[in-house]
Image (cartoon, rainbow, N blue to C red):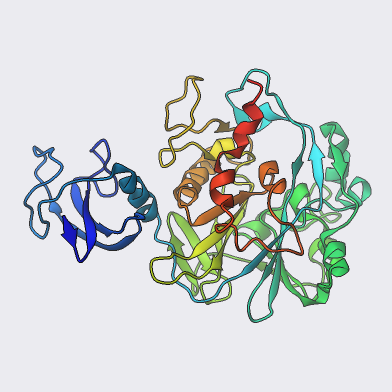
Length: 406
């Protein structure tokens, strides 16, 4: 059936084997060959006795469901309405550190026989450049003087990990060496306050803000030495603007299930409230290219430690592929999350992220993903052409390389 030159599809409800979206409601998608939605209308609730895939309902013509692969694309596109905006952000990956090995069972379950440790992993930092010239740094990885430079609660803890930590430069050093003066950095954003993300903020001038998530100040201040048990230090925020994003008031919206704060006010970069792993945990969503016509905008999602391994994020009910016979349903993730300050809340946040992760126009990068580290361009290059290079698709399931021997 043709509607304005495009094929017409009926999208069923959540009780249908292929259905989704609104329980008991027909939704009609006007889509093209690529599966991109160009128009949506909704009909009244259909009779519960009618299980057909077509019918005469008010406002809805009788239609056939064709090309089921397109329906999967429609489902994924409609899960989250990505925000509109005209500006983009240049995203550059910085990998200041690699460390490991770490015990896999600490972070996820159930186990895979023979796969019990991560050999090593990165802890990403990102330089985010706005067209106006404003610059942000997302996370600082591990500081180069980690053995002595952190708060005593951290320096006392680190030897017990057995980690081989390989870091020779702070993020500030890397920026300066590549012609980016630290004085040009408007703010450092901590995804959260764990030692492998906070680096050394004191290596930036006091004109650089430190941005943190909701609840941080109440839970974390004061830092050491005023509070000798604190994982952060007073020097991390001394004499600088410590800005806590509360997700209330102007600039706040909803992206999928996430509360979102429009940092620059132009739709180029959003902070996402993503609690669970740690108090005040943040994700970031950066618009990397601006589409035109049928070509959609693309985004990079900075996932922080929403999870420590892509197998906790995938498969999902939105991406049910590639599950293994370990007593898991085809729509279950490979692993369950087992590490974080509030495991049930962190698991709920993973579920929110899955709705963005299944969108082909969003490239999710979690902080410790070595498969990303080993493939993407690193600073001073940018990754804004990630979709053109096919990185979103090629890296989606790259974590299965860890099972090659199994």
